[in-house]
Amino acid sequence: MMGSDSCGGYRCVECSDEASELYRDYQRGVLRLSICKSCQKPVDKYIEYDPVIILINAILCKAQAYRHILFNTKINIHGKLCIFCLLCEAYVRWLQLQDSSQNIDPDDLIRYAKEWDFYRMFGIAVLEQTAFLVGIFTALWVARAEMLKTKSDFILLLKALLLSSYGKLLLIPAVIWEHDYTPSCLHLIKVFVLTSNSQAIRVTLNLSRKFALLAILSGLLFESGVVYLFQRTGLNV
Ligand SMILES: [Zn+2]
Image (cartoon, rainbow, N blue to C red; front, side, top):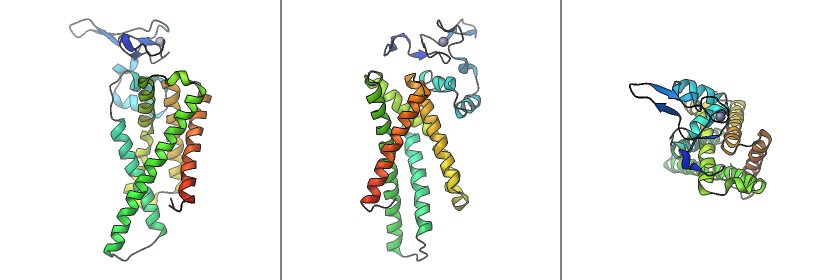
């Protein structure tokens, strides 16, 4: 069953079974949604939906909406989205750093030091994100090596994880309204991102909720390992 992308590469949003087409075109503007052979429901009801409705369904972490986005669309913004989210994260951390070290002196040297601080925060955010992903892949590899045996399985999961981190965009208000953001807000954003990450793993690999959560935990473990290493080496985060 796995890896046979020859039949169109689409998936039923209800049961995740493979499908050759999402709809059939009967000419003169008559389209009919294809019906899934195994669950007898429309393969992808979302192709008729408004993008806003699809987004709301994705925010509600509905597995069907995740399947639609990951398997049945050609959405290809995960790379840009990832870099943008990392930049936002770096900026928020940089702001926190500025708060903790109050310097009003507009000296050039300090300005350069601040700029360097931003690059440092960006580098740390990149390393943490990488450690998180490595942790997830390691856990899944150890538990079920056969699920990640081809390059396309690997790329699909990576894409799913990066896309499902879109919740980090909620950091943008933090960038705009700088000081009105409380740490609990940042924690809530983190919980939301982790929930959608776990749903993305579940949908991509057809796993149980428990397995997906374990993978996320392993990711968090790797991430905190990296943070710990930074603190030990004196590169304060
Ligand atoms: Zn189905």
